[in-house]
Amino acid sequence: VPPNAVERLGDAVYMTKVRTLLFWPPLRPGDYTARSQRLASAEVQAWGLRELKASGFEFTDDEAHWMRRGRNCCRNVPARLKRMPEIFHDASSFECLVGYLFLTDQGRLDHVLSAFFSLVWDERGTKQAASIC
Image (cartoon, rainbow, N blue to C red; front, side):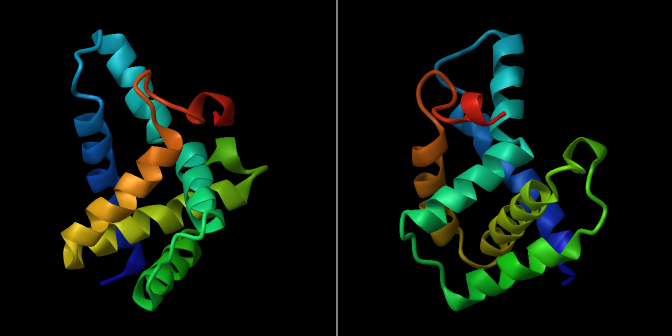
């Protein structure tokens, strides 16, 4: 399976997890959308992945392999991130990891996302995301 396909799947899975996380308590539609978009931004994904690594979170060799594949698969950096391509590549790496785990080990996916969200999310919608974006 090409890594860009796994990365796109990871993007969809991650957005579903974000929207599920924010589902309760109910928010006004505009707040729900804004918080979802903030948590799904490349900046938050890249920052969260870097924080996971810095915290000593252990990735398996297969997970590290798929993160490398995801980081290297995307060459067309969006215009808004042209000056910071490492953010786009780190976010692609994270989404590829999410897609890979969705296909192979959903229990591990839940564990990784739980650790990730504990770093970037709180009851108001985002812990660090507001200062990242």
